Length: 235
Image 1 (cartoon, helix red, strand yellow):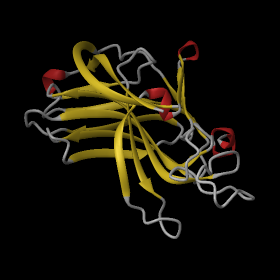
Image 2 (cartoon, helix red, strand yellow):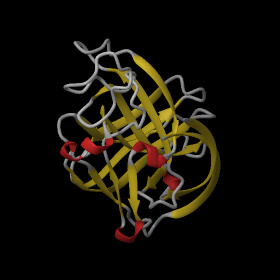
Image 3 (spheres, one colour):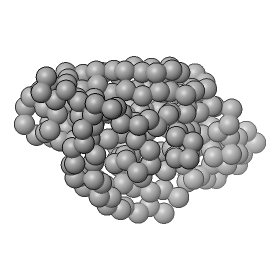
């Protein structure tokens, strides 16, 4: 079953040294205006053609992100889809070749999934250098999944973007991007986990990533922005 919901978010953006064209943003807890987006592609050769399938808004928990505000962190897990159809999963060892519902324990994934957790502001950061700071508490993902930290500056129609993207290594991070001054652009910052989808009971051996949620920098001021975003939930 699929359903679409509209999520209204009030984005509290962190600004510092704005007069000098500098903007600093941090990592919020679950109360922040986080947005989820998933890109899906076929497996690369020899199991697929690597072709892009679709991209759509997903609700944050469906990215397999779990917030733990009491311990100032959230955790990214490998993406898992509850739909057993052969679109999502290949046949498990000893499975029934004639059954299109391959999904279940031991069934390997049939797609590459790029889960993006981010915040976004439109227009307000144009022409400024945006710095995204935080801390990766741990990253135990295996080579099957790549975790990254990014800032992206999209064209008004999302047809192109500039980005700074780095591997999510444990420890403090600080990345920056000089954004375009053009009107109508969209600046995003957040985290990405990319890899083969995994059946929910099989995720433990693939590892996870823990990210710390940190206080607003002492020199930052708050800028209130509002946005309307679409999310898709999967069972």
